[in-house]
Amino acid sequence: MEERRRKRQQGLGRIFLRLLAWTGLAWLALLGVTLSLTLNQALSSLTEKMESDLTAAAASLAGSRMVREALERGRCSEDMAEYLDALVANTPDLDIITIAGADSMRVYHVVPERIGQQFVGGDQGRALAGDAYLSEGVGTMGLQRRAFCPVFDGEGKVLGFVMASATMDRIQIMRREIVEAYCKLALALALATLAAAAALTLLLRRLLHGFGPEGLVRTYLTQNEALGDLDEGLIATDGQGVVKLVNRAAEAMLGQRAERLEGERLDGIIRDEKGGSLLEKRRENAQTSRPNILCTSIPQKKEGRRTGATLILKDRSEAMRRAEQLNGTRHVISALRANTHEFMNKLQVISGLLQMERLEEAKEYIGAISAVQSKLVAPVLQHIQNANTAALLLGKIDHMRELDIQPTLLANSSLPEHSAYLSTEELVTVVGNLLENAIEAVDAQNRDWPRSVVVQITEDERGLLVIVSDTGTGIPPEDLERIYTPGFSTKAEEGRGVGMGLIREIVARREGSIEVDSEAGTGTTFTLIFNKKRGGGEG
Image (cartoon, rainbow, N blue to C red; front, side):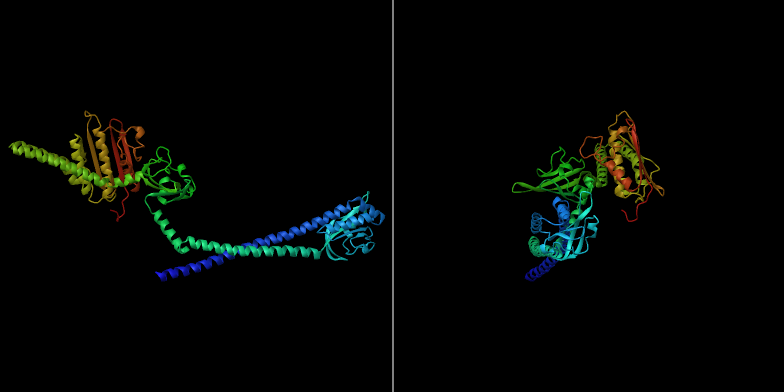
């Protein structure tokens, strides 16, 4: 145990280091890209702002009346010189202002000794031609970024120009300050990133309770697969009733994909049969707003506050269908019980006649039974080789005779021991449900009306034909399309209306066909045809 714990801790230590390294590298890479982009943007903005300030200063001075008058006089007044000196001193991005005439002789310069001298740099030509522009030039104070703006007289003639500039040394200093600030910020953010990665890793390590990520993923996948394989639908919600988890069975029952259901409020998807919420209290197999779904709801609470709920859904029609999967066995058992009951009644009659020493009457009674056996039972045993189907027919025949219904198995019936088209279970389900419905329909008919049920079961190489015809109450035209609907029945009894749905399911599965010919008050005939043989491995 100690060795296993030690190995697990070592594994977690390696995971911790990998997570720390990868998280740190990812954040550092992202940080580097972000800072590089913002640094370039900041430097570009600095240049644009500086050039904009220089251009604005040159244009403002070029348009002023005192500059125009200074150029016309050929000299700058003391007040104007003081103003320009103060402007240069108080403007951060401005190092030099030069005002020169049309002959490029300086009228003003930030260094007074250079007033009256020729402008240096040779890049003033476009300004003398009337253009405003930016350029780089080397003047008496070194390499500069310069903004030129011409000065016009009242008639539009160029009197000279104004040049506002910043030295490249100042520009480099400003750029260096920005880069240094970003480097300090990058270092601080990098340290913060590493600290956050370490804190996050430690938190994950604590939350994992000693399990590694691989183990958690494996556990999640196993549990998810197990939930997906459940026959019952499963829905999990949070405290606000929002769906967080839906398994495959619930998807099928609700008819929507999990992606559509998750994130929706449960009350908008399913409620109880009265429209109430399924989240309020615990319920067992409650009826829901969806007729075919039963729900067991298990609310979860902590300190009196709802933290979520788990709902287990059951397909009501599927549950009934599974119960009816035993329908074949039920039909056979019912038939055998009826046969046994009839046989015991006959034995009791014979026993009574013998005790009364009425031998002739006993012989006549036995002869009558033999005649019935020859007429009704013998054809079944002769033509129906499938034992379960034969037992079913014999039981139903006895039941019909008890109800004064005339049963008939057509002479052209023929069924081998193993049908090539339906399994024994399917045969008994189809024939049993058709006969049961026919008997009920005839029994509900007026006693003065002919009471009979005719059956034909014929199988050959071309296919399997099953016909059940009765003289019962018939099916109203408006109900013909509804007889296959789960839960629909002309009877009001609970749990009915499944048999015809099972029959249609078998017909669809075996790619057969079913026809119904019915007239209300006269009778009904069901004709089923199966032409596709089932696989050799099927039971």
